[in-house]
Length: 401
Ligand SMILES: Cc1cc2nc3c(=O)[nH]c(=O)nc-3n(C[C@H](O)[C@H](O)[C@H](O)COP(=O)(O)OP(=O)(O)OC[C@H]3O[C@@H](n4cnc5c(N)ncnc54)[C@H](O)[C@@H]3O)c2cc1C
Image (cartoon, rainbow, N blue to C red):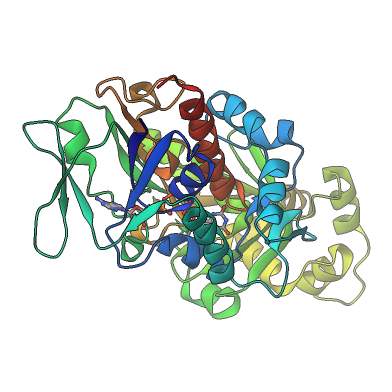
């Protein structure tokens, strides 16, 4: 007899799990509280829609926190496996100049979702929408809320794929933590990741730089360095290069209430080279124009230097050269969770075994962003969720009836 699997949530982790489960062995139902599935996946589609990244898998694994947790998962279902799978369901992908992987240009996010859903249909996966999981009753049956009723479901295996805590409008609201805490599952409070960071800028600086990117720079926090760009916002800074430093910035904020990020505005030059250029003759040019011309610094970078260093340091060649190579940025806060691209926190990794089964609740598994891990944007988040779904399916498919 087939075993029943109830999957709660219909994000990428859940959909990949359902697509990879053996239809000969399992009757699979997905329960989603929204009317339509995978809203956050579609939101991701409106932005960059990086399905994954083309890093060699060994390098890719190192982008995750904790990397050791992801090693077996990504080795079992890598970025190449994901691209092959998408191709097999009629979604060819390409590698962009940023090395991120996108669906081919004419393919819209909804087409990608529909292609996945039609795979599930072929496998007779039932998708039950507008159905919110509310925990368990005293008989250990699953409680749901649908159309003002409280239906009860039984399933041999329960997989929770409830997502993180940001962008609540998509349904991933983190409101499920109590149900698990009541069962003794360790829950780590949600925190924003891949989010904007608060910096106090002066009005004159914002007049020049708000909405503009600090390009071709290197950003460092603690032991982590990332080259790229970030955008100045009215309340701070955001963008790919700074998102990648989220774990380090969060750590400093937690420990000290503030964080320091250092910008190298001329990463291609050594400090000696920058000093040499700054000390070169400037003729009748103003000091600012001299710096702009000698180092090809754009207006945003010049404004940022003036915002950050004292007037005295700005005028002394050796000091301004040192700041150009190591400009301190004082971060005072994380953006609100709801505005973050992803969250850390949720189910502690100590609460699950190596196959995602909750140690406190036999037969109940948790996958996707609802677990406490972190990764930068650029395709790593979706890859992780898809890989967890595929990894768990492989494990369940192997289990004896
Ligand atoms: C603006 C934005 C852009 C992004 N862009 C990218 C990108 O380009 N590349 C990338 O890799 N990642 C991106 N991400 C992140 C990525 O979308 C998420 O990491 C991913 O969707 C998480 O997948 P998941 O399956 O864990 O959960 P989710 O996709 O969050 O799905 C969880 C589902 O569970 C449902 N649910 C929750 N509670 C219940 C309940 N009690 N009962 C029933 N159903 C419930 C929710 O309604 C939701 O549909 C982006 C995110 C955002 C917000």
